[in-house]
Structures are given as structure tokens and as C-alpha cells.
Image (tube, rainbow, N blue to C red; front, side, top):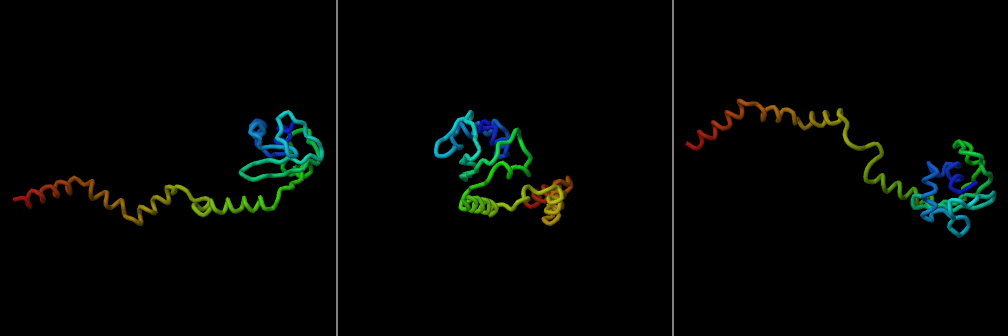
Length: 146
């Protein structure tokens, strides 16, 4: 089986074209040499993949006939990635959570209404938009000038 199809079938990449693009960028190698998309995968090969700034190593146990379910990936591939690489991944994810907690983003309409209620922004706007208050404001200015 071709390596691009293999990486797609064991769910390492979402689409086969993404797998082929990554192979073209020399992010996938068997042994120490980078490969082409047409390279045939054999049982026992150790594939090195650079993904998300981490070097993954997987060993081929079996070659699937087509794309397999996530439950069956462990029957076809063994993860040989160093533990240090996963620690790097955890550090990177924790540093991203420092700036923004997961699930927090733009306020919802309910949040916005609560904020406006807390700040009492609506009451100030009503006073400014009232025509009588504008007229009164300008008449007070004219009286002060005289």
C-alpha cells in the first residue's frame, strides 16, 4: 500500500491529499530518508512523521485494506514516539491555555445584557437621546452666556 494511503487509512491525516502534501514537504520518512507518496509500506517499517512540531514514530504491524475505524488503529500500528515529544506537546497546550481558557470567547447575548445591566449603560443612553434634555441643555448654555 502507498504511504499516503496508509497514513490516511490509519487516521494519521484527515484526507489522503493532506497526507500527500505532508510527504511532499519532507515531513514523512521511513528510516532516515524522506519518501515519496508512491513509496510502498511494508510490515515492520518504522515511519517518522513531523506533525504539529512533534516527531512521531509509528511501527507498521499490519496493512489495512482500506480506511479503518479509530478503535482498530492499534491493531495495525504501534506508537513508538518518545515520551519527551508528548511532554513538549503538553507544555505547548498549557502555554496556550494561559492566555485564554477553553470555551471563553466573545460574550453571548445573555452575557452582554448582564454587562450592560451592571454598567447601567442603557439608562445613560436614554437621557442623551431625550429631545427635551437636549433642548434644556442648550437653553442653559444661552442663559449662562448672558
